Image 1 (cartoon, helix red, strand yellow):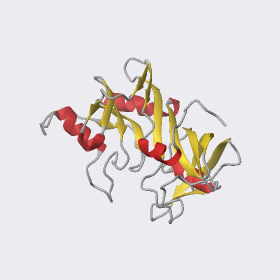
Image 2: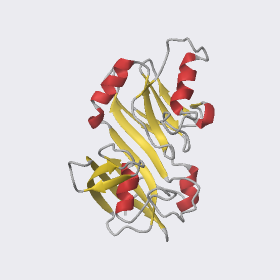
Image 3: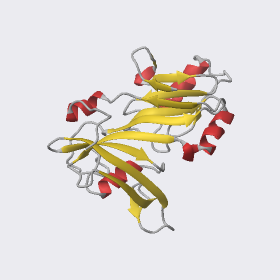
Length: 238
């Protein structure tokens, strides 16, 4: 089953769009700027909060709820899975290594290698800054595969296969090879004045936690990307 976002899909507060819902899961297209779930430093309205309100239909004492299966960064848009039962959450997380995740990103510059696999160990310091290290005892193994699908004079568009799911993995790996994500002032150049982070969780493929059916959900290319590089053909490869 393959599902694309379309105008008829249900849109909730803050532009959170439901792509699919059944008794076990809710799959959404999260807009950039919306947190997946609150953090110690940031307690603002989140995708989790909006979906909790949605499944409870405004009744705070309702037994209905959602469970966070995974997260994407606040500045990242795209596909997210939430579970509606704890059993569904555990089933998805127990098989997370089998789930396939593709991202789309716009980076600074033109890459010498038009496709590659970036591998390092990622660690985080006391000020929440993630960095690569060759020391396996200090970090967790991270693998990011990419291919260039479009180039302009100053930017490249990459399709990224996220082979592991570490915090800020794509952003750190691409900055580490000298091509930071456009709009990333944490890991890229401070003088980058672009209004948003050009990173989008384009698709996710997994087996349904109850039926076992293979499912794929895709979110369209954000308009912001088109403002940066024009139309993007996802079937292209340089």
